Image (cartoon, rainbow, N blue to C red; front, top):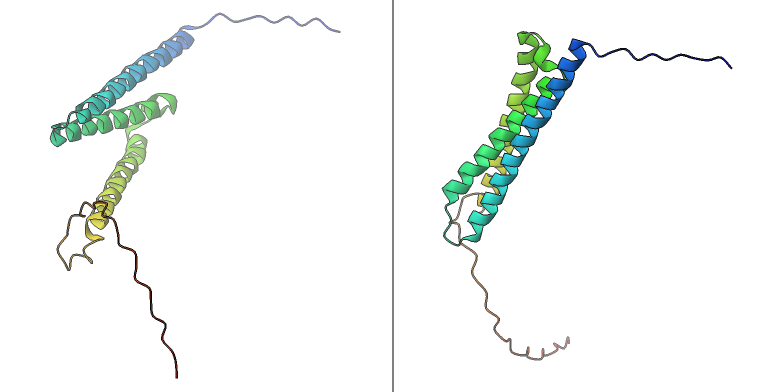
Length: 150
């Protein structure tokens, strides 16, 4: 067997800068995630109140969506090294991603429209709220008389 000598190179300034950048990304993503979780718990506790504001819940959900999109673009810029690229390449990838967000929003709106119209024969009759049903005891059905064929 031959003896193999392994020497470890000392870290360079570029290596240390790269490690610092990764740790910075970790802390930024951790803080954004904690904020999102806190906002989600806030929505949970707001909705426990019977007189909660729908507008407040909608605003908080919008903030959560914005933070999620910001996290996605931050992850793309750091871990996919898109932040180091030229501006044209960034725009080439960011604009379709933005259109994808619009695409999802359009499908959600279309689904909500379908849900509102499905019980109204596509808008040809007035929407009626479902009635609350009460448990009423039913009478026993009467016996059917058999018809005789001649």
